Length: 341
Image (tube, rainbow, N blue to C red; front, top):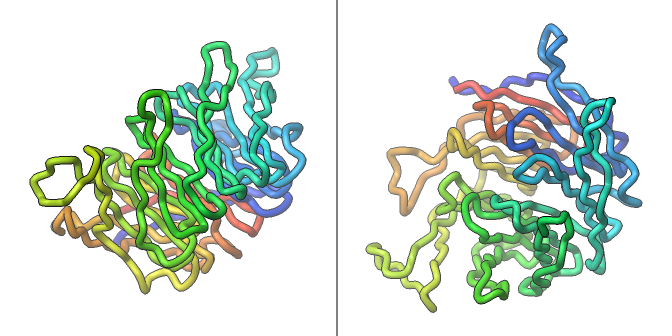
């Protein structure tokens, strides 16, 4: 019987914890929240239980709640997005006191709260999105400068989340307007090449699988959906236009989450999907390997009904350690979990 075991509970934040993530080696857990801090956590190898402990607090970058945080692919930079309308870039500085992060740039331009920040897999681009309905793409220069490459106004409402394709410079965004938009670069311009419509309310989060050919979305409508990419000239008879791929909703899972689903994370090692919900629960799913890949069935493997004492805001699979999951909540805590199947 599959289960999700709690490894440790991490106090420290003074207020809602909005977002968790990992560095690309899976050795550092990162979090941010209402207390305007970014916290870095690492395993204490000297402790008997190998517990995760906070070893750095970044506190001098933002004036309001920090909503999102992300490690660059090289692990030398951290980007944080805040309700103060800015995105801070933190650079690792090696000193006699060990590795410390220092705010070396503040990206300004959004007219309202910045809700999410994400690095492209290539490390060449950074994306931010905002309550001002826009998505900004920043080009990362070799000298450490950040230049705005595009301001994308495809959404009609607050943009909640941005994620990059795992292998290509393709960006997906989720919005209060109930849609997902897909962007790519064409002839030095960034364009919207796809709009995914199927949710009946706010799309809170989204995640690509390891191939980048499937996308999972979650929503205020209490469903999760799986979308599949169909290329031009595909053998399945799925129509495409303008020689661009079509993304089709191939699975909708409803009647499982009694409240909004705030986050979704698709493990690139195992294929497991984790969700964070407003009913204080964490759930683990997988696509039934026996099901038709063009009409897949999602199996629910585990539910932890009281994973946190309040809303679960974010979940993130460790990119290296199989089955290790982090979560955070309105209850001011992070938790680390181990999946056992």
